[in-house]
Image (cartoon, rainbow, N blue to C red; front, side, top):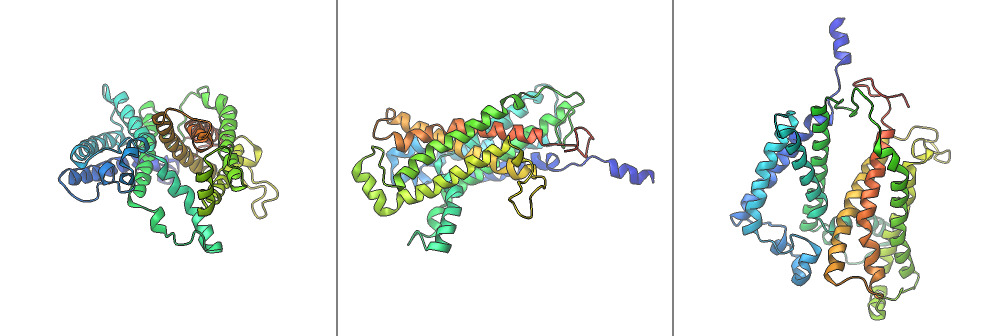
Amino acid sequence: MTEMLTKTRRPRTGWPAWIGYAAAAWSLLYGALGLIWAMGGPGFPFGVGDAELMGEPGFAFKVSLLGLSTPEVAGPIIAGLGALGAAAGALMARGFRSGAARWLLPAYAWITAIGLTVVVQDYRTLIVVAYTPVMLIGKVFFGWPEGVGWQVLYRPERLNLLMLLLAGVVWALTAVAYRRKVNGDCTSCGRGEVERPSTLQRWAKPATWTAFAIPLVYSVTRWAWALGFSLGIDPEFYAQGQEEGLWLAGAALATLGGIGAVLTLGLIQRWGEVFPRWMIGLRGKRVPPMLAVVPATLVAALVASAGGMYIRVVAGRGGVTAETWPLELPETLWVVWGAALFVAAMAYHQRRRGLCRACGRGETK
């Protein structure tokens, strides 16, 4: 009986127990690829090996910070960082905290996470994720776009960027899990012995409303183009876009953005916690927190990375003009959108944690 009770009370481990090892394994494997590329192996996905960027070499660096990289230079760097990441991830998984490691390891994890999810990214990761449902609906129901296959969307360079973004998320989670271990907090929910004042909750509403408003700025311009309003951009370019269906595709993407903006409000509304009455079969049931947190966090990383690229592009062109503002200005706000959405999602997650079955802290919700 005593043994049964001990097993019942044993804290759940979950993802914090293995996430550091996952980060280490990914770093080791990608570092091995870097070594292969340095030795002349095929498949280098950045810079000179990025066929999509090399279509316009003069524009490559504005799109990607790695737009001018070569395997001879980048390969050894990737290999070295991969080896370092493998060691850091394993140490964090084991909870190593001696001396300066207590702050060096999480600093490395967060720098790596930001580097992979934002710094090395460009708009193409967002294109893959956003246009997948658009193309799926278009092809299944309307046979559109004609003559465009999935291989056009899922180019190897784009899939590589998507993989790097997901790896960055893994590193961010590694940092979170490590902080819980070294602080003695519950590894399952993150709560400590003493409940600390929450800065996140103070910023929840401003962040949510910001994340709601910014995508609407983008959506309005794309809907306007689809309805025949050029908004001052070059007439010839606008006419060409109409012929190619470019503005219809933009409107479809803007519609997704608009829907996402409305759903963002659920992070601070009652219907974001309990399904509303009009949802037959679900009404009155509790909304699983991860149903909102996971997509919101992913979108935050995607739009922030794309926004950073657009800022580089606009800066490289000398700023926004009266003719180019509809094309570029809304996207430069995406870094703020991503940051606000991330804060809103984390505040929602913190508020919805409820009673932790591992440590018994919190309240039943």
